[in-house]
Amino acid sequence: MKLATILMVIGIGLLGFSSSIAPYKDGALFMERYMALSAGQSAEYWQLREEMLTPKFRLQDYGGTFIALAFGLLLISRRGWRNLKAPNSRAALLAVAFASPLLTVVAYIFDLLLGFERQEFPHWADSMGIPLMGVPLLLVVLLAWAGAHLAFLASPYRSALLSQAASLKANWWLIGLAAVTAALVLLCVSVGLYWYAIPGTVWLYFYLSLAATRRSN
Image (cartoon, rainbow, N blue to C red; front, side, top):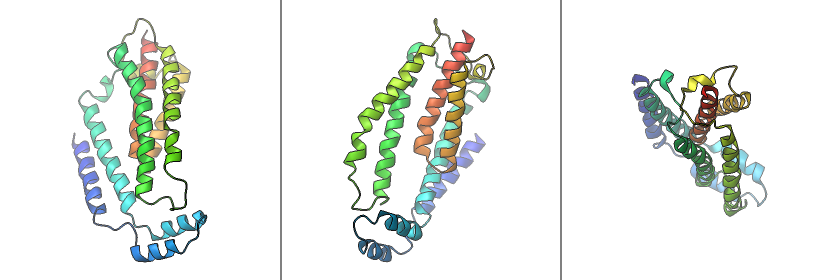
């Protein structure tokens, strides 16, 4: 609880401090040099932007990450690490299987909109409509991926402690997926991409739940 509170305070502090900082060291100079670029000079634009950026956006990202970590610790502390379990019912696990792709797609859309808001793309770049057109296909692919892994569900379904997945007798494919997902979540946290770390954590819970219930049965 104390750690969660500390993380929350740090996150709020970072967000508050970032709000007092301008995005660019010299906004007028940035726009002047930006407007002097010709269409197609994307590399030059990104170099200019990188040179002129202040820590504002990075502080915002880490602030949100600290707050997300605080909420995650609060949820876990209610049960305790050792008492973390797979969903209590098959229907609840199906809900997790659906939520994982949905949250991933939401994170992707949020990433695009945030990049647009932060001027990560020059005005001559392709419109937002092109990457957004791929969202339905991405959702279908991820739903199919999650649905295919429901084949690992044991019958009859019985909830189990997630710790049961940490065994050489557990399904190696699911454990491998969980290990890769955990590494990606840690990477996202380390660079402040909380919007991808959140769905990544749900995917991790999904894989561990499948592995634990299968091992238990």
